[in-house]
Image (tube, rainbow, N blue to C red):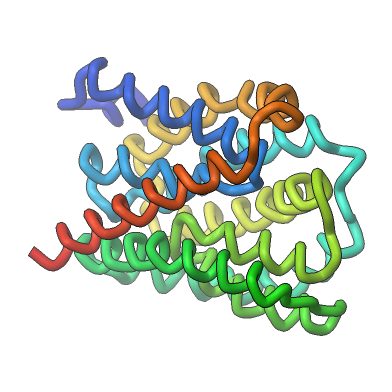
Length: 252
């Protein structure tokens, strides 16, 4: 497989914004726990279409989440990681398979819709201060598996579940990353079996993943300096407009 063919008909000037957004999204994700899956579709869809986006992000996320785990290793809550994975992995397979059945317009609708819904969902869960025990965490993870298997930008659901289960601070970022590594491997396996892992998918995933590697370690520097509410508000606006743009494009 010639990975350079994955960049056919795409200029270096089109790849620069992808690399820049990948680094920014990685830093934002290292600070807040989410952002990569929400921001990357905004630059990828215009270049490659909607269909390859979830596989690209699934592969590239292995790089970002692995670096995040190493950066925040001592904060990982391994017990809750096991609970979430036991419940989410089976339904993740179903969600990933369902995504491969979608048309390009259908994929854009799913991704755009999830991005738009992620903003009010996060704010609603935070406003009501939802709290769950181990059983509630498992039930929530069961539903999360379906969503994460077939969308990008759904990481806010897992973050909300972990916080509702009592995970706090850097533990949320670390535990989310540990869970996401396994979920990513499951998604990639499904995508590989149905034949949607192309040279283009691997090429873009490697570009994003390698550029984003330092993001988690840079994020550790910003955690104590950057007001989280500021970048969260900016990210919300970008995600809402980006999601609306994807939905509008799919419905044209």
